[in-house]
Length: 240
Image (cartoon, rainbow, N blue to C red; front, top):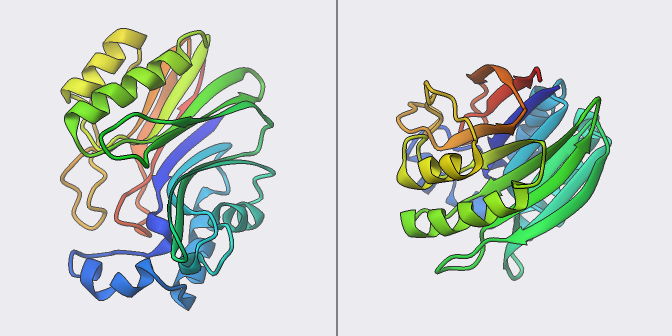
C-alpha cells in the first residue's frame, strides 16, 4: 500500500515567496490556473493507494463553488473519499482536509482539534485494504502549545488501532517537543532523516510527515519533487 500526504494550498500554486503577494487574488477568486493545478495534482497522486490532503477548498468561491476533493478524486481515480470542513470564510472559502483512497474507508471520524483559535482538524478513517490501517489526516496549528494539545487528541484517536499512520502538515519538525512527545506516547516512528518540505521551491523546514505506529512498517519514505503548492508531498510504502 502506497501512502502520500500533501498540503495542496487550495490549488493556488505558490512557487516563490513573491507569489504570496502576486497570487493573493487566488485566495478569493477561482482562476483557470487552479483547474490546471488540480489536474496536475490528480495525475501526481493517481498511483498512491491512500492520499491525505490538507488545505483543500470544499466548495467556496475560490474553488468555483465545487469541492476540490471530489474534483481531484474524479480525475485521479480514487473511488473512496472522506472530507472534513474546519473553517469557513462566508462567500469565499471552505477550508478542510480530505482522504482519498483506492480502498474502502470505514469508521470515518471528523475531529475538531483543540486550540486557542478554532479551525484545525484531524480526519480519521480505517482503510480496509489487504489489512486494516487507521489513517489520521491532520493539519496542526502554528503554536507549540496548541500542537501539543492537538497531538494528544490525535494520540487518543489512534491508541487502540493495531496499525496506524498519522499523515499531514504538522507545522513542526520531527524533533520538535510536541511531535517527540506524541511519538513517545504512542510508539510512533518518524523518519530519522526528517526530509524538508517547506517552502517547496527551497525547502528549509520539515513540516510534513508520515508517522507509522503499531505494527505498521514503512519503507521508501521520501519527499516527492512535484512543486504544485508551497509544500512538497511526502510518500511512503506500507510493508508490514
